[in-house]
Amino acid sequence: MTEMMSNGVELMFAGMGIVFLFLTMLVGAINLMSSLVQRFFPDMPVMGAIPTVSSGIDKSIIAAIAAAIHQHRHKHK
Image (cartoon, rainbow, N blue to C red; front, side):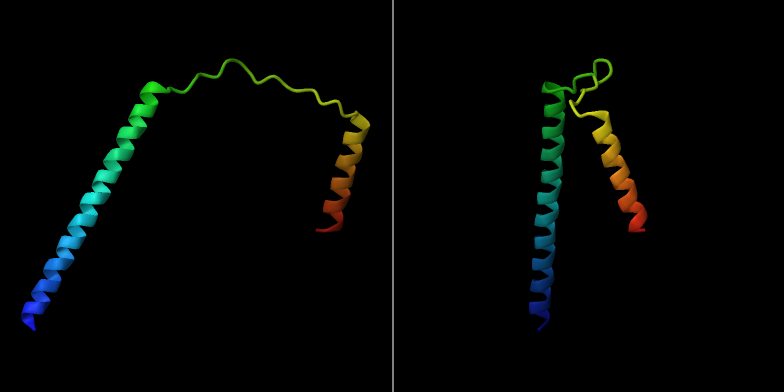
C-alpha cells in the first residue's frame, strides 16, 4: 500500500512539474510575442483632434428624439 502511495505522490509531482514548466514557457512565449509586436508595429501617435462629422439630420429631428427619450425615461422610472 505504501508503494502505491509513493508512486501516486511521485506521479503527482511529475504532473505538477510538467504543468508548471508548460505555463512558464507559455508566459515566456507571450512576453516574447508582445515585445516583437511592439518592436515591429509601434503605436502611431495621435495627430491632432478628431474631426467632427456633420450628420445630415435636421436639428428639429434631434430635438424630437431627445424629447422622446426624456419622456420615456421619466415615464419608466
